[in-house]
Image 1 (cartoon, rainbow, N blue to C red):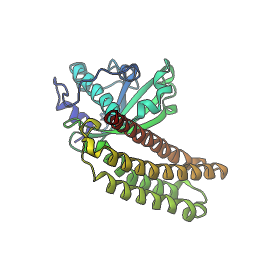
Image 2 (cartoon, helix red, strand yellow):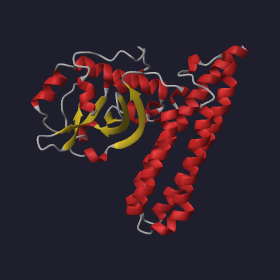
Image 3 (tube, one colour):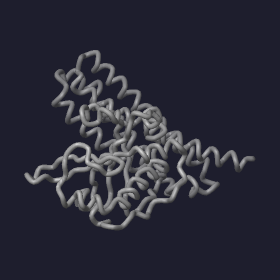
Image 4 (cartoon, rainbow, N blue to C red):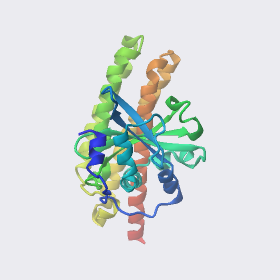
Length: 298
């Protein structure tokens, strides 16, 4: 089921699975300036990305009459979709906090790109761009992170960590495959760097998945008092794994730049950005849980 087909299931309806939140100003600004992008099929049966403004005006191209009419008749659905996205960032990410510079910039906007993952589930990649250069220089957008949503079920077990941990393997597979095509002197980097990335990703994923299986809670408020310290310990352990992986990816990135392997560096830069956001989210969780511990001690 493709993105537009999922959206059409909500014809003249709204998404109601997410909590209603009174957002702080930073998140309000993100919601107000959120553009959405998804794939449509043209008359030539070619898949093409279409970008819509916060008022659901197509930015990049004209759209067919049927889709235009659907969007025009379903602005309340798209409003609820954007609220679902921002609520998910509030609960299960640190993308907004990590990229507050772009969110606060009066000249910048956020773009949410939908990638359908089956049923009503999506991976969403987020970008920032200068609004005035959106049409003329769209490829200059800045990648700021990814998140995952399920329109049918907002809350995610294990404090929403499982999706990020599992995504490490997918990102590693892309890096390993692209390295073969993009790195000129591939063999020079394979053993010392690419094989080590493969090892660290697998170690991080397996160890982190083992740790999160010790708690099933979906939100910080669901965690029982008696489990707070144990979960903080496990989150700190997972954070250290991510930091070790991030530091090695940065070392590899710098090595490639010194070797003028610029065609491949951008893929590592994106991966490193995801790791930065994931670490920031882990710190966010640790801070919230420690706050609860402090209240108990008081």
